[in-house]
Length: 191
Image (tube, rainbow, N blue to C red):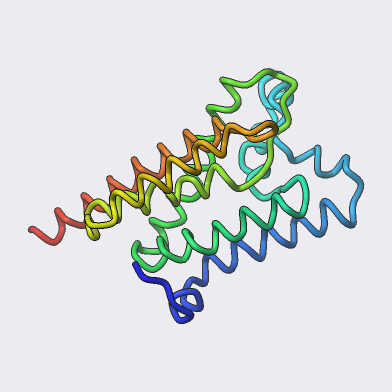
């Protein structure tokens, strides 16, 4: 699980996701008018009343400002590279997108209709959850440190303006799929 320069360089899907997020930020925050950003962000009333379901996915590639983008992309680089180097790429993508979608769905149900939500953090929390499962199964000596790290991220999620539901349920999605994929791998190794 130790990441070095080679590990980051081999994380091609992670680097692609970072590039897509960065390009979307440049286009939707710096070039186009804010209406275009709002047409793709998760606005709960638009998803529920107008059935604009694409917002549940497109919002994962949008960010409110440069600090939001930077913090998410640093976390994506660290946890994305770690998961990509320890899970097959298709499993990595499943963890990423399903965790983000789970976080957005619970945000849809648990937050008011007028809420606007955007960012990759639900998907990234899914990667954090999968990394925790990896540590539990492969590096048990790091479980304590992993729990402290997860607790820190969850506590920091309760600041104003942060969609803590996307974080919590994204994390749960990552734990679930990380467990399913690692269990499947153990089963295949055993038989």
